[in-house]
Every structure is written in structure tokens, then in C-alpha cells.
Image 1 (cartoon, rainbow, N blue to C red):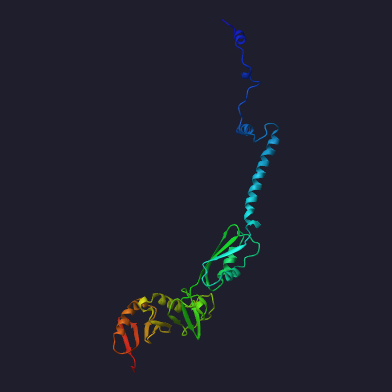
Image 2 (tube, rainbow, N blue to C red):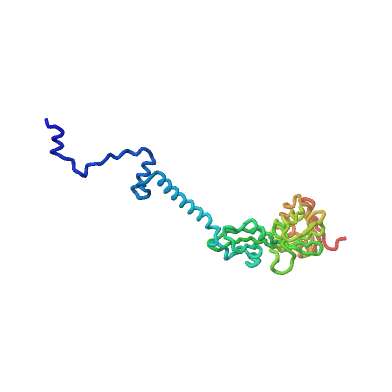
Amino acid sequence: MRSEEGVAKRYPVPPWMAMEKPIPPASSSVGRERDEESAMGLAPTEGSEFEHLLWRLGRFSVVVALLLSLASLPFSSFFEVREIEVEGNLHLSREEITALARVPKGVSIFQVDQGTLLGQVAAHPRIRRATAFPRPPHTLVIQVEERRPFTLMEYHGRTWVLDEEGVVIGRAGGNELAPSFPVRLQVSFLSIPAIAPGKPISLEEVRHALEILHSLPREVEGEVRELVVTREGFVLRMRNGIRIDLGGWKGISLRLHRLPHVLQAVRSLEVPVESVDLRFGETVVINPQGKP
């Protein structure tokens, strides 16, 4: 039998297969991580543990600095407000709304105090609501919804323009405040403490009167000139001079529903009519002109 020494002499191990020392297995995940980073050239392969720690701290510092730079970017002068766009305005000009907004000079589009800005814009009696948003890099957009003049309210010789919610837009005068609804509201029988632009008329009678205007049948809208609020209830004054007593708020929707048929019956009469009374349920009282 041949000895191992003889085999080794006859078949020597090639130099490229020889190892100076065995590669020890990685003792932990940290060791494996260092081996991978060393292979990729991302970490020092030589040196102490302290040098490796400094290298890792350097990487962390770069990441933190980058994040801080990104966080501060929206507040830098790069996004300074240079233009204000206004959308949704119909009667107020862009210059008027921009003046109301009072955006500070040099502020970033991301730093605008929206609560303050929108409060200042919505303080105008013509503005119902407002929103704002940035449009990078230098534009601030303000969107508004204007109040629409709905009706004219007569009160002790003064005429005020109201929107559909009963908010006072201003004094009547000029086409810019011409209401969309042809019927006026007469409330001189009431006692309204104060009337101011931008403030709603909070009296229940006025709110009910506005609901009546909204509920008027379309086929009779053009025939009604004025809705009067009295102590007894509500009265319609027609363009042909006829007075129609609607009565109190209770049951008003039913009486309004009957109104077109009542007016049709009145027009069919051969005698001129002074007033129609709908306050007695199913009974309609028609008073001819000249009746004592």
C-alpha cells in the first residue's frame, strides 16, 4: 500500500489551490455586512472599529443634512410669491381681491397664513366663501364665490340688496347689484335692530319671507311685484294691483300651491278685483273693486 506521503509527492497540490489561512465564517450580521460593503467598495477594508464607526456616522450626517435641506426648501426664497391669480370673481376685480388678501411681500407660497388671508377676503360683503392654494413655483391662487343679489328689501325708505340666504350685500343702486329675482320684499312693519353689509337679517319673519319667494310657482313669478311682511302674515301685491292675503306661516306651502289656479279664476271674472283672501282654508274670498 502506498503511503500518503508518496501520493502527495507524485500528485502535488497546485499553487493556486493553496491558501495561506482558512477564511473564518462570519460570526454575526455585522461581520457579513462589513464583508459585503468591503466587496462593493463602500466601506474601509482595513483599520480599526473606531474608523468604521466614523465612516458610518459620516453617512448618517449626509442623509440628515439632505433631509433638512429638503424640509426647508418650501420656505426658501425659491418659492416666493410673485403672482396672485384670482378665480371665480364676477363683479369684484382681481385688484380688489388681491388688496383684500394683503399677502406679505417676500413670503413663500407655502408659508401664507391661509386662515388670515381667507378671513380678510371673506370679510367683503360680496364674498360668500374663499379658498387659496399654492401653484409652484411662484403663484398663489385665490378662488372666491361671490354672493348673488337675490331680492331687494325695503325698510323705512331704504332699499337693501339681499342674497338667497338673507345676507345684506349692500345698498341698492347701480346695475352691479341688480337682483336676479323680480319680487321685492317689504318689511317696514318689522323692527330690525341693525342692518349692515355682510351681516344676515336674523329675524324669523324675514327668513320665512325668503322661503316664500323661493317657493313661488314659476307661472306667477312675473305677476308678483312685492311680498309684504305684516303683523298678521304675508301679503302679495300683484303688478295688476290685486292684493292677495296669504295668512301666517303655518300652511303657507299649500296656499302657494293653489295660487296659480286662484289667479286663473280671477282673470276669468268679468268684474275688476281688488283683493283675494286665502286665509280661510278651502274658502277663497274675492273682493271686487269699489266694494264698500
